[in-house]
Amino acid sequence: MATHHSGYGTNVEGPISSVWRALQRCHEAVHAMGVERIATDIRLGTRTDKHTESPAWSQGLSENERKRESRGVRFSSSYAPCTKYMRATHVEPSVKLDDAVHRYRETTLGTYVRPPIVFSHGRGLDLFATVPGEAQSRRYLDFTGGIAVNALGHADPQVAAIAAEQAAQLVHCSNLYYNTWSGELAHRLASMTREHGGLGLAPQSPPAASGQDVRAFIANSGTEANEAALKFARKAAKGTALVCFQHAFHGRTMGALSVTPNAKYQAPFLPLVGDVRVGTLNDMAQLESLVTEDVAGVIVEPIQGEGGILPAQVEWLTALRQRCTAVGAALIYDEIQCGLFRTGHMWCHSAMPVEAHPDMVTMAKPLANGFPIGAVLMRPHIAHAIAAGDHGTTFGGGPLTCRIAHHVLGRLGEPRMKEHIDSVSTYLFERLERISEAFSDMVSAPRGRGLIVGISMRSAPWAGEVVRLARERVTPCASSRV
Image 1 (cartoon, rainbow, N blue to C red):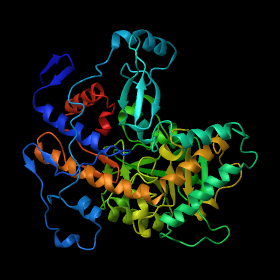
Image 2: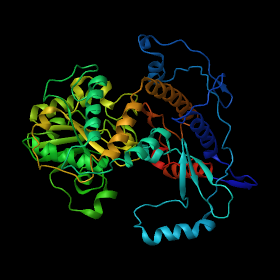
Image 3: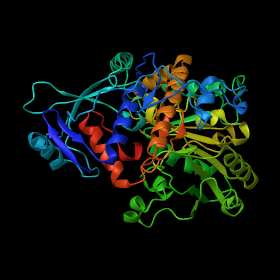
């Protein structure tokens, strides 16, 4: 790969340059929080897309669904390619930042490898980094969203106002007592699950009888939510073994790490929790031998996030549900990455038949738009097995974070949000499909659903290079999410 320098920064040459230009145009036009629209046909190189008759199988689907599900069928669009970010403008000022970075590293445990960028504030889609010697902060278009966290953007005015108001009233009182907002958040999670479907409930389910509603346990993070779900499975089921699947990521604390079968994370901390079995996603043939009567819980991501945006097949999840029911094991869906409307539905499994629904669903990331929170929502039979003292948390369910989460959940559930997600998802898949078709030797076809979408570079160094090029062109992202 060759580069040359100009007064505007570094230009890219070689085979990766075409892919980079296509990706940057796609990203600028499609960012989830704002989309540029211009009345024109989409063009990639010299090719222009025209209206194409919909195939017979697509009849009865909505326009957005037809676009998402089709492969090889071209649709005209009202979006124009972006021409911004063609040149590097944010080459890392490592010399100027040496002092700030050194100060940080001197007193902070080195569990992350970070580029020398120090962010000071954000606004909407943007992050700002203060650079010594520069008059103005550098603006970056945030393409990680705090690792799928900032669903409403940075410094959202409504979130900020609610946080300030609640902080002046009550921040913490412990779980020895009731507080208004933990109860309101749990009620909203339950009522919205009945409305949108999930945990064995079809959409628009009526209110449950007393003692028969889904119930929530509120924690501080996704890892804590998964730890709680594993404990609840052990308490509610007959067996003790746990089942997870290759390429999964469920957290880094000891129990969650034990069901995260990645040697990079596990090897330094062996031995882990015993009696954990690892299966293969979407492998029907192994379910009977994998999930046996000594299994307490099975944990799976309906769409694996860190593993590479790998969707589980609905038919396989249905068979897994049936097998868990047959042996009395609790089925846990980790929807920390794919839940809370990221797919366009409240839960990823909300769009599935109730025969594929889990006993518990875990959530975190966007729930409070950056304030630390996690939760487990469970069916009544799991809740009835848990007694006072079986689990607990000092900070989980605090009124400040729960009030913010209550607000965020309400906004994510607005109909216009789903319409926006569907529209942007359709566009994103169209553009990424064009890139993969034009550069099939370098880039895979997109996979995922809604706004949890991934593509694979055929070479790992290429992925790292795209991340570097993006960062130099005001778009910080991570290689597992390019």
